[in-house]
Amino acid sequence: MSGVKSGETGGVGLIRKTFQVLDMFRAESPAWSQAELVRQCGMNRSTLSRLVRYLHESGYLMLNEQSGKYMLGLAAVELGRRASNSFDLRVVSSAVVEELSLQERETVILTSFKEGESFVTCLDQVHASQGGLSVFEKLGAQFPLHAGASPKAILIALSPAQREAYYAQKMESFTNATITDPDELRAHIEEHQELGFTISREETYPGVIGVAAPIVVHGRPLGSVALSVPLQRTTEAKITRWSKLVRAAANQISNQASGSHLELEEAAK
Image (cartoon, rainbow, N blue to C red; front, side, top):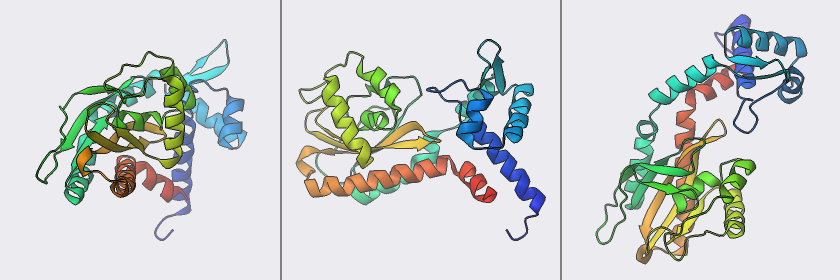
């Protein structure tokens, strides 16, 4: 609190509440009434009413007159478009990806994911530095969310409704190990959701093991970070270590990607 006036603290607190309201509007819950926002946000009714009125007047929220519920407005859409155009996950992740590959001397793959899509895209990779066989992936290559550790890491970070929508799709098989049965995939994802990482055993390429964790910012998966290793250099003890390392790397990238928001929340406390 040193060097911060009470008015500044209150101002930051109001900003935090404004973002709290905006963050309620997500793909799985796009519309809210004021009464619902009051219950979910735990704010004073008059405070929330003023915030909603301001956001509505400035174009960040729009009101559906028939339902009486608010949705994100064009100003919010434009802000999201500008943020998407300027945000570069590869830049944010590069140091962490390189450090992980240097530590394990194995290939590290970074993927990106956009909400509403059913696949991940290989965004970057650092090749294994040790001799012998190594794994590499073509930049820009895309894989559906059920095939491989990197894509499945996205599945464990999606909402239940989003996952169920994906399970209902027809799933392509890449190898004999690719999980294409919805019930089997659902059980596999539920198990690894609790662990915070996913494992792929020859699901996209024969002779390749993958261990991956999702990069999540504000509750939304932006991509994943994975170690991809030849089967012959894999042991269960290594998989256990790699699972901890990819989770730590993904968490570090997630924190860096949302750093300014975290700093704002800390200042508001």
